Image 1: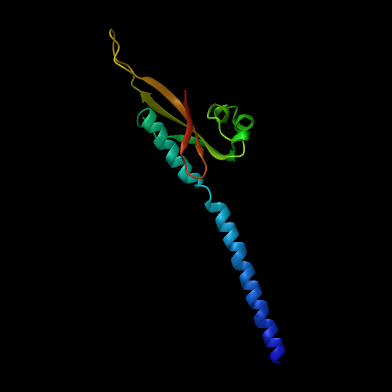
Image 2: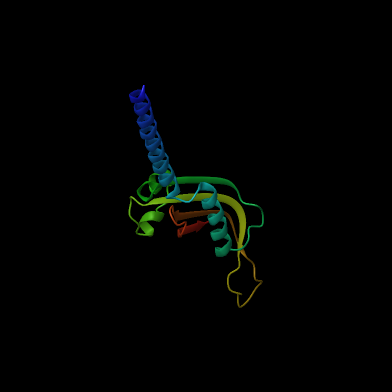
Length: 137
């Protein structure tokens, strides 16, 4: 009976160790990158800092966690090659709809009117959330 108890105890220890290892690996792989929600919040902030606060709450979000080398094929955007980043680097692609106003310099003649943008797209490093490229139209 003692041998059965020892075998059971060792089996439980080994099983527990394996479960802890698997959990640690899974946690590590998902914690390497900022979350989708964090990427959206950072992208909204980058769009505001570049132009102005959106005149309406941004919506119609399109997010992708992809390798830089896949951005052109997945989105049609040449941002990774423009930023001269490694094709293997993981990035968040975040696009959204809104209404941002960009006030340029005051013209010498005529009224000072803003340029409006209805979409804003941000490409950022997936680990840090640092912006690589921002595009608006």
